[in-house]
Length: 282
Image (tube, rainbow, N blue to C red):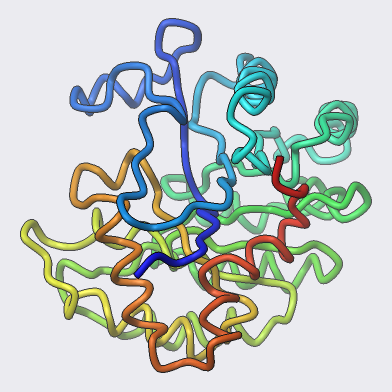
């Protein structure tokens, strides 16, 4: 059966045009990968949200403009989450104004997953994140599970900003550990201004992972955030190191199968459209 899906988390890149230093460590992915390479299998795709792919900071605006150009030929690209140097505090305003002038930009991400937790609660960074609300831009939180308490402090300090947690905070799936991740997720979800992407778990799991390995994490996220704050995402093409788009969305379909039809539809597409205020399909 085909499902109407909006993929809330995809990346594209062209290493010839922009430098992505991290790709040198992942030779399987170190080539141009664009929307023409994406394969949802039997699922019916109704849109992508492109998320910045960690090129050099000075190339980030060029990345946005490249993806906007791609969208002219691939109208399924319905939103862009761009990089911005939010750690600069109020000095980031001109950069954010430039992003806000790009019609497809719906949010901002600055990778936090390998940064000291002190940077997440730094006063200048909090000031930069607060500025997003004035421009109707969301903030994608990309962290590892040990950083969840600090991310919660950030969310609580910015009540007017809408946040989206990437990859369920990268829980320790390979170890099968659920706690204290569950407790931290429950506290984060108690803030109404944060949503969660059901994405990225296949690369956190051990090789040869089975559906049962990831289900407890997905089920807990659905329980504490609810379907109107959970959205399907593939993390393509990074996820191809461990799965296919089709298989990952099969998992999401399975974990939402017991929900009411409207709630399953929310997780598979409507939540992403609402949270990111996506442009209509082309």
